[in-house]
Amino acid sequence: MSDYGRGSLDGNDLDRHLTGNWGEDSVSDDGLSDHDVKSALRPYQDGGPISRLFETGEIGNDTFPALSQAAERLEGQGDHEGAETLGDVISYAAAAGDRPPMTGWPTR
Image 1: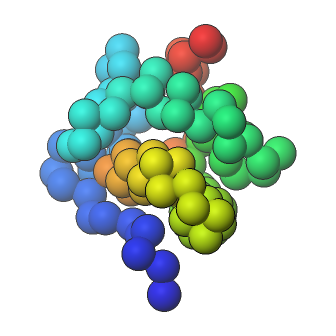
Image 2: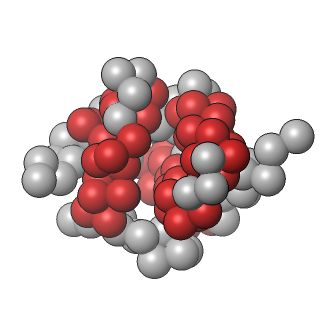
Image 3: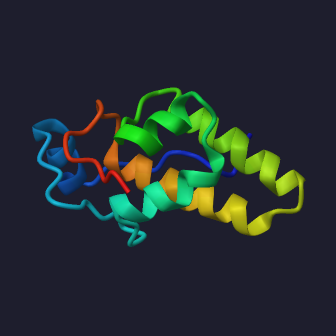
């Protein structure tokens, strides 16, 4: 079983998820903003769920396994910093919850 998994949503995260009110730049409990996540994912785009999160902010059921597998692959290659970065993105995504592509997702 992977060490990189989903957390639980607190009341504020659940409210944002249900209402779609993500604000100007949502921030996870780890302090990652939307911009931080986009920057962190740039080198790990996969043409699939990781790329969709990078490009549009979309988080779906396939996002977590893709991030977890990528983190485990990096860990196996000795890239502990990259694996930790993806672990932080997994925490961000778990706090945000499943969501469709976001209007206003950072473009840079």
